[in-house]
Image (cartoon, rainbow, N blue to C red; front, side, top):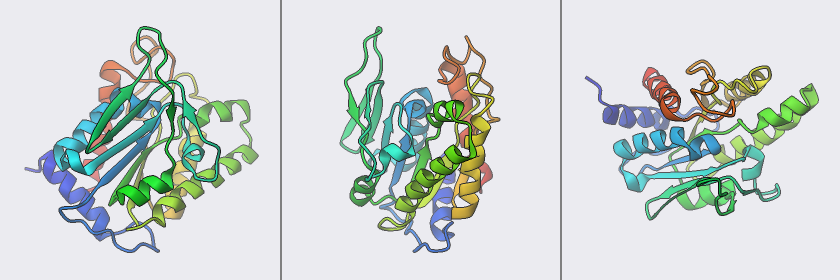
Length: 247
């Protein structure tokens, strides 16, 4: 019987032994492997907590790094793009630091400067990078649902992926797409399609969350986007099952 611990070892070992990009130098999977998990407000919240706990329980606390910035999209993590200061929360977990900033009794959290991707990769040198981003592109596409806007976002996405795939150690990349959103259901498929197409083109793994859970206003959450309670756990469980299916 394969336990979660065995899965994590074999899964990340699989990514290391069989690199997903033709230009990769094989990541070394050993006792010093590290995972960097990057996300937006969905990772700041309960989903991120569940996935963080899952990784820490199976890889140990000292090998898991989490950086999530509410309101962020791939471009905000790029060196050459303007800094993004989040005013709605963050989640940071390193071997020596843990903090979660969220709204508390209606009061906004302390601002958080979204870190840039290259310095994180240079400092941490992860074996695998897990990314949960794309949710905040829904607003942009709702306002400008054009092919030109998709092409503009693809430039950011490609730069983000290239930064990871060309970083020291050439880490494997796994991208978790946004889950169902009742507020942006009409356009969120454009983001999912872009992520899946880029994953095929750049040869990284994409976990499609769009059908794992359905957003029910008043039950899943209150704004049509952010998941709380049982729905967040259902989504997290779906991602874990998808990981198991990669074996």
